[in-house]
Image (cartoon, rainbow, N blue to C red; front, top):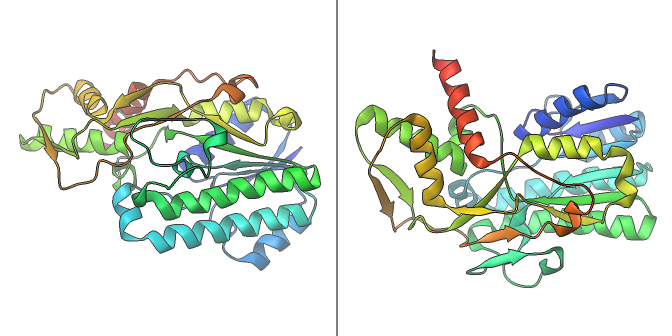
Length: 306
């Protein structure tokens, strides 16, 4: 099997490449990042797919950042993602790529005060304003996969993960995500002696799943995509208050800081817990808890600074 993984330099993409190398060494794997193929260039994408004729494309590439950047640059999050996704999906369909796994986002679900979502809840209400354009772009990709699967009989599958964590450097990009931000703010407080600021009231709830669990399951299921539903949630099945993640970060660092809450900053969506019943019926069984993710980031940080 010839497999193409986009976004191979990203957190999930790296894990998928590693999972393929360890679990499916017999396959030919092409790992793509922006230096190898610019997905916004339709002609280059079409030429690549026509030349390589992969059996499977796993599409993880996306423009995704923290809430502050999504609020500041909504147009970019809509246009960049729509262009990349439509270019790749159109070329894959055109050149007869039989199997396609698209990584969507839980941002496609409506904003509610206490939401638990199944796949039937897509397009049943307005999106969270801060993530609206990003969510719209992922709705388009998800619906394109479902429509191609229905119309052409191809195995085009959209997976909707909750928040993803994994090994990542404690850089600006990592700090823009909740686990990285919680750890960085805690480390700064430990160094400077000040409080740890949490945006909003800290009571909004977040569900996290490990990139390693997603990667292993996709690699394990590569031969069985025909048996998958066209759209499936892949969540951990349990969520926690944002303040809990900050407490765990403090536990990992070994400090007991004061927490302050900035009511001028957004809470974000109050709750978005995914019902992953469909995926679990296809073998989805994540095991890695988010506290492990905070420990990973901290261990990587110590390795870099020691």
